[in-house]
Image (cartoon, rainbow, N blue to C red; front, side, top):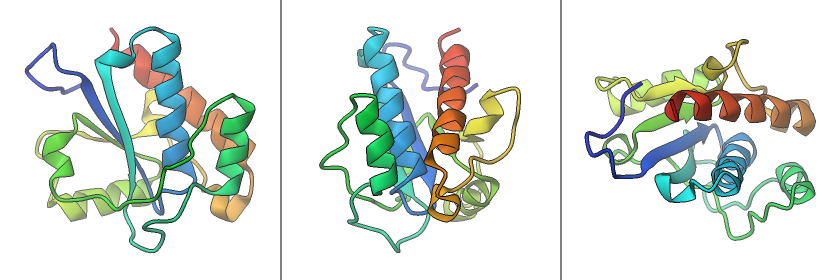
Length: 159
């Protein structure tokens, strides 16, 4: 796994989904909680963004808010933003939720020369896509997949 040459710099992670209102903010805020609870929050910088522009400025979807609130995680103030060209240079890991996100990211950035673009489920024993609860309305399955992906990612990056 690639990362900045400055070992003292925080690991910079950008979670990405289509609209930045369901999956990627769920991953962003769950990851922030996990690293805070582990006492290593200062070693990470975590954000999320969208591949599309259709939800820019929208708040986190109520289904994601409900899941996060149940865990005692506050995501108020988060609004959807789109991936920017400078994000490729700014982040060590750009983690998409599904294969369409990955394709769109590679297209948007004109490739992935530094091998920074991953799928979240690639860090689990069951690679594939995190289903979009915008369509499935199943925020619990999405949460379980994201939780497993974050566990796998943290295990790799903290080796």
